[in-house]
Image (cartoon, rainbow, N blue to C red; front, side, top):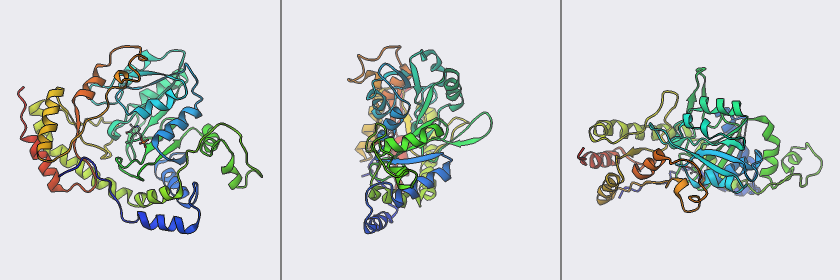
Length: 381
Ligand SMILES: *Cc1c(COP(=O)(O)O)cnc(C)c1O
């Protein structure tokens, strides 16, 4: 049996958890939280990082930080996970969905400007499969219309974007704010877990307050104020040291994890590219400005029937592939709230995209078995 996902352990997780428990400081913002946050700041150039209990939480922090209010409009793709929109819906925003591109499921940057109104407050690009959105175009629009950009970088750890200026930047370091996930289905994991990256320094102080239940506890512990109290709204967004200790064990192996995952991705790509061409099935397209971070490998079939056939064929050999994301504008909660055009590309990915098994411990033999099974499947054109 080849499952779709299998969480990878580096071996040191329980060791660091044992250590965290032994120090007697197991609530949040201790040694391991600091180690992880500084690691990300140094490696990827984020101005400030705060670990959270999920990417969902990091997105909710972002919505609080940019003061989303009832009636504000937030532009994002429809082909994404519910948390991208829930975070803003919780603050009363109306979600304006942009269609995906023809080349890949990311939102089409050329379709955003027509959706901007005086009520628009933010754009939320999602770097699907860790492949960058066209950030130059998105940041230009944000500057022109004075909007905030919150990157949903849940899938995008260790992936990059090269702008027209030729400078390569980590995904999550470009927007004003960015949210990452360490859910067990992502590249780097802590079971549940996430992180807010803050790139616009005006948000740093308030982010720490919102993170710590609306108190200035973080500055109190640094000795910057002599008492702490309730200074703003907030919630409990910080993870315990037990979670951070787990994450630290993963971060020590980040380069190794990434090179193995990219190896898997490349094997899939090389084995399937000719078959894809011959059968009209699309493989992931990594634009010139983007990189591939080995987060997922997907195929885009020509129709839902073809996708179902492929999934069933794999399943018959005990290989578990999955599809996801019913377009959010068509989901039960939002269909009557959605105003605006049809989103044909979003629906296309919803109907036709299939994700192949992808995890660190997937062996070369497993990949051969999967790709042979896919290749033996011929479509009538
Ligand atoms: C996984 C994911 C999330 C949610 O992450 P959690 O850490 O589970 O809250 C949000 N957006 C996208 C695009 C994701 O893939």
